[in-house]
Length: 262
Figure (cartoon, helix red, strand yellow):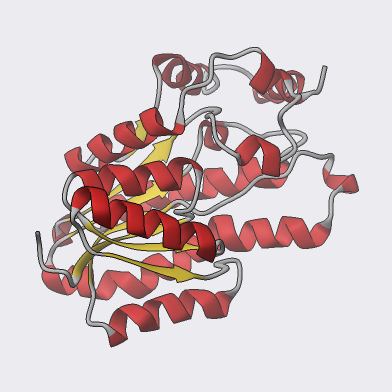
């Protein structure tokens, strides 16, 4: 077992892609610090991973849409002299609605979690990575990052931010031997569609949806290879390239049709 103080920190680790990433990292011998709001699930998951993989697993129940929670995670790492060798910014959520009809608090919480938490936690943990001249960062974006998204406008915009932010700092951090990977899955079997109220959209009904496990395994391999933009699935990769060639107005209409409930 590696040094217990050398860890992989994973946010949004109690379900979906985050949970599967925790399993994949543990399976490869990484010690973990798992972050989520769901303390009951974190406790259960931690015990299972310790038992199965003989790794050290810590957890913190925090709502990362709140700025103070991000600082508390960082303080915990400092106080326990933890070395974060891999940072996985996975926590996030979406919301399916016309923007004019949406709950503005939910939209602002989404911005805080999907964008602010990624930026803030990365900025806090980077200095030690730079000092050690070592580290890997996995930011979970989405294929939503490649186009505007009517009916999920803030979510799509937030994932575009994550993608562009990841690409930019990946370039900046090359001299420091730190890699940054933006994982861009398409629709995935997880509880995301339920929390986003998306289960009845064409996007979810007309596609063969991969499991969170498959996405997590691909994300881990891409991170270890130092890939900057990792789009899961051939179809998703092709679509991400095609939308760059089409008129913007056409792309928006296509996405609107896919998003609509039928």
